[in-house]
Image 1: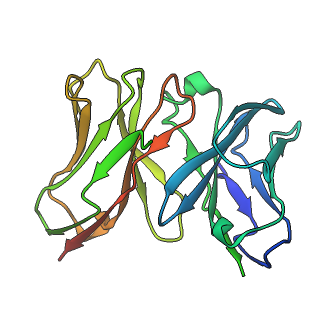
Image 2 (image 1 turned 90 degrees about the vertical axis):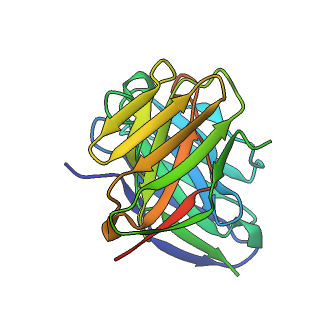
Length: 117
Length: 111
């Protein structure tokens, strides 16, 4: 069974540009959550999508946005990149929220390492 | 406000020893407490999790101890092995909503 696939693995962007990251969840998983991981702030929740609808949102500025497609694949977009946006962006999928315990919680992808220069 | 506080930041343990990582939380509404293990270049992977109605859960060499009144929980790794060297994160959530993660503990098990 394929895991969570995130593309690309690495990105280098210039300050002010925008970037789109992609996440393909495990087949059958309908919930996709995004997290930002930095050495200073650790893992911080960005947002969650379920059946193409945003179900929950973290405390990030509006420059961070996302969407989910009918096949459950998700993308997140960061506009007007800042140096502080350099981070590992992780996507996590799960079947249904209530199944997270029975199915051992989130399954994370390996992330996209974004560097803003 | 940091919802989950984790300590220590780093830990060095001899092979065969016990590794102990501690976490404290603020929100008494949290009802799910997982631990994740992360190797370099990989995303976190669920190790073990506990609900607040249980004081201890053991899976192999990994044990969670949970103290509801103190709002603390800890991960114990028995017979620590070099292959356990990784970063460990505790987390908490309410109704499997967004997870609040601790700051992480980098464990180094010396051979």
